[in-house]
Length: 452
Image (cartoon, rainbow, N blue to C red; front, side):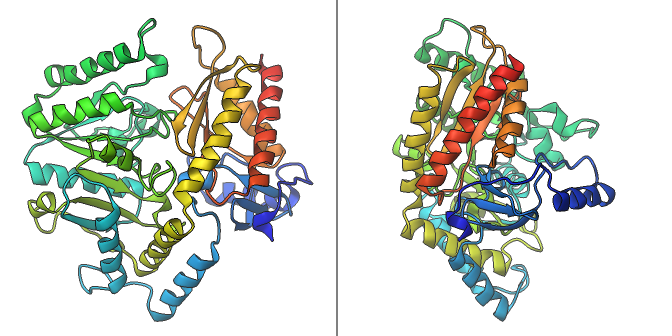
């Protein structure tokens, strides 16, 4: 079966059939929506993809964190088919359907927000989820302003693009919404030189507090929005000491914390959410925004928050036509069942142990590896040219291309484009994991020689 195969590339990339489809794509789709890889999928199972030319690829991107349970999980396919036989859609503003009620109840039980009595609403995507989370925080608090962070990525809608740090994502899209202010993310690897970790945390806390003087007084701030592990920013985890202190600051000033778990959620971190760790540390968020792997590839997002937060939201200000679509809800219920039944968060920790051990071992011989970091099976490798930590994006570009030529799909990240992200499906086999690590290491070595 495809899900048990190892990568095998038998043509140049793209192959002749893929080349024809890619040329057709260029003729009918906008060039502003790019495709990074010369691959046209024919079918996918587990962590494996077969393209239209018969090449087999090991996918360590998984739709950028969408496919934690892998491609075409048979139990999910069955659940969606059964729902499709009954009905596709019932708009929750018009007709109640049982799947949405069941999923909201399940999420209320397992999503670790601060308040014990919870409510959940549904959306279609990560960006829409974050947009609604901000609306909920503003409506509930009666305050206008939002604090986001350097390196953040929250989406491409007008509001979420404003919240996103990287200017390329909203070039030429102004004027932008007001009330969004940016603090410095606690990027320990790039903290001022000479600081210990504790000193670096204090430095970043100082930069956070400076926003209240330089941008918005705290009594005007509705919420902060933060990724527990930055995705596009370079797979940078929030330090425990920092989030504990920020939780105390927010509590002092009545500011809500919105955890953007769109990419980090659903087993990736070794827990169902990174916020499960935060809860253990005594600093859970008030609102959690989720999407991507929630429904195994069908479009769905959700926002879970305390009941008292939702109670203050003005009627009619949140909701949407397709939020909580019946097929997506059926898929999500089955995805959560699979994650609990098959212990996929535990599998994430096992995968992470092998991958992190390999990455850190490579640092001894590959001096370009400046940092290895992350939480669970959401790991980043940052590449630098020298002891000054000069970013080396060219090396990453060559590594990604060489890996693809050998059947491994990986992706770059980071403000400087010098990070390789590790997001393989949690159903990857041990043999596939070992083979993927071999391909990645030799691809990095190839890129070092080519660009060094």
